[in-house]
Length: 139
Image (spheres, rainbow, N blue to C red):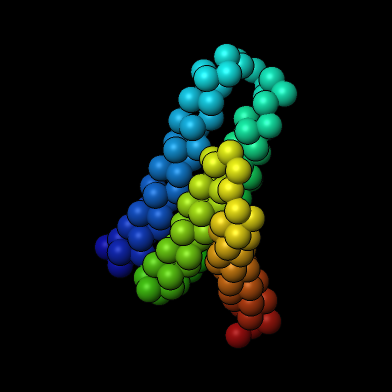
């Protein structure tokens, strides 16, 4: 298990950073709910609709990324690869969250945030798919 410690520690680092992004989104959603006195739903407030959607998007994307990253780590992914994918994904999720937290943000932050997140997800997906097919083929 000692051999896995650095790579799993790296996964844990990025999982924790992304949890901080989720807490940030939840905190900003709560502040906006208190400001507009909306306990459930969005109360027809466009900014609240926006931030709720950003939070939901994070919840939709983060879990699968980290499940795949853990699998890749357990299969022997180099620690540097975990760091590269973790950094790219985390920066992407942070930018994406920032876009939705702002009442009127430039589409650029959403585009860049989504693009970085997607890039990390696709690299991880292709790597694991390729690895699985290679092993199945007897490679």
